[in-house]
Length: 344
Image 1 (cartoon, rainbow, N blue to C red):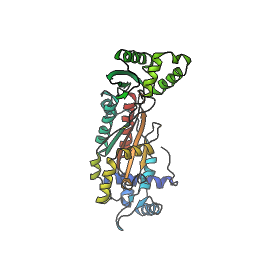
Image 2: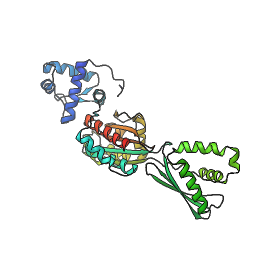
Image 3: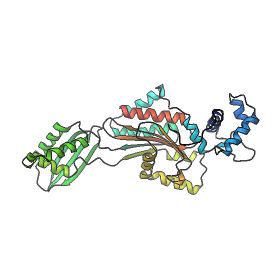
Image 4: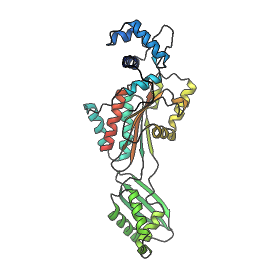
């Protein structure tokens, strides 16, 4: 996880700051210097801890809700804290159970949808999972059926067992026998190829001199022109647990809460979140504070990962929750669910 530009903190100050963040995550209450002194390993008096906390407050890492109360970590503190964490990659019994829940399902859509459910259950926040079509999807088979009136039903099945269909009008009558011949030609020659590779190969074949006299190539070119291999579809977004955010300690007005739910209902806004903050490199990413997407998201964090699925699609899975959440646990869950999707 890369540094987001926070200034360097002396190691002892950073340890104290992270102890404050951990205590706040656990209790939800402002953290007093005496609490840090009692649980710390630094051998410092409450007065010394108080001075360090005052310095951290001046640097924007802590706030003080009330004069006599303890300190509360700011978004800046959470960002620094997250940088100190490592994703737990060990396969515990819990991680094995998570992975098995995903692998037992049939079809990429079912696996991705279950991912959002699993992450919601673990985090008690909002789970998000999106299946993203790519040009690297692999063809399993096609089916072509004449419907009459120069209409053809084109059905494409990917290696991920995703089925898409489309009815098109063609310029010439094609019988079911002709369509069966075209179907068999495609399935025999191109099953297991990526869509992009098939299109590139067909372009080469159609550019040759013999394509003028090869009726099969001409008919295939006709169907390709009608979008036979352009049925990648739009991303499918699954979300669960938005209502869990109501019970979190978000310091927002009722009006802002309504804005939050309206924002979370927009699939495009969710996709924007995933696209902007999750790198395509398979590493678990954490974004603390999402106000640049919408003000209602300012007190929320996103923990997620992008993985490539075996059949050529991509998936983005994430947890959207309050600043005060168990980052280590959620980061580990996101990682293992991503691994389950990637290897299933």
